[in-house]
Length: 383
Image (cartoon, rainbow, N blue to C red; front, side, top):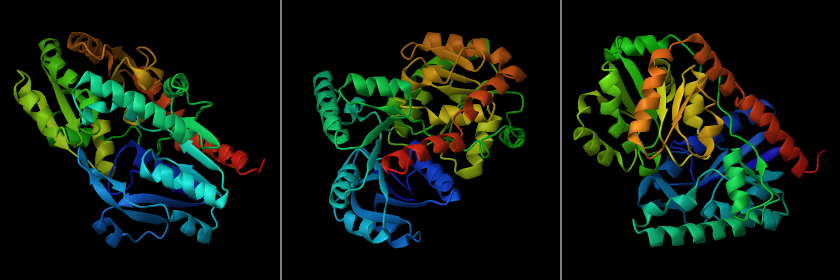
């Protein structure tokens, strides 16, 4: 089967969507399918692209988040799809590339699958801080999504929480289809001990968080909880891995904390280095209130690490009691601290690591691709 992925986010940007697309592409190609990517790109990205299966369209940078671009005019993509003999279009986008996918599907009479990845209706803080403006933006965004997804032959959500939220806002029917993680890459291992030694943290409890440094990740909660955690566990260290437009905001907040010496911003970690950071952690902290699935939490669990997460949206489906971690109030630093402190004494126990790994394996890219492949076959009329 020849499959076209349309996305508003792709390399060189790195996020959960990009990782999911890359993992799905690799697994589908292992199974004999051909996958082509259609995405926005800068002039530099377009000039340096050497992947014949990736087609970039000129884009404008998105001011609040310059790592991302909006494709200016991707609406001739149907001509490329026709030449490639595409069988099905899978839309991962929500902005201009989504509309290009819709146009191409109509022009070529191809089945269109759309997957929901980002909770854009809750991103009104990128426009203004006013509650009135944010509420209006949320209403407009859900109306746009209803129109966008009404054109698809099938729509998927990566968690049951998102499926229910989408249906509540008038998008239906929605099928549950989680994104997969590479459990052969993210796995328990000894590289974490080497990294701990390199960082001089052999005697410390490492509390790790990974992800884009943006306000919706709610990292301010963890920074505010840190002094309370250190009061009971003075050997704790907090590692923040990632980068983003609110990096300076978080660093300034950390610099004003009594715990500032234990709040370490490690920057972006590529490839195997990221796996080493997961492996060196004792606890993965995940205060985000914006997760449609929580792939970072699953990557940590695949490395055998318990998760302390905000009791919000999709993460509640991953953290299933003390066997895999704890949930805390996303607005309460005291509760966050208490829950993490309750986890620290038992975080090294084998049962917790085994339980976390068991949950992660339910989301292996192989299992998730089985479901995706079946959906493709159904939409393409091959069953």
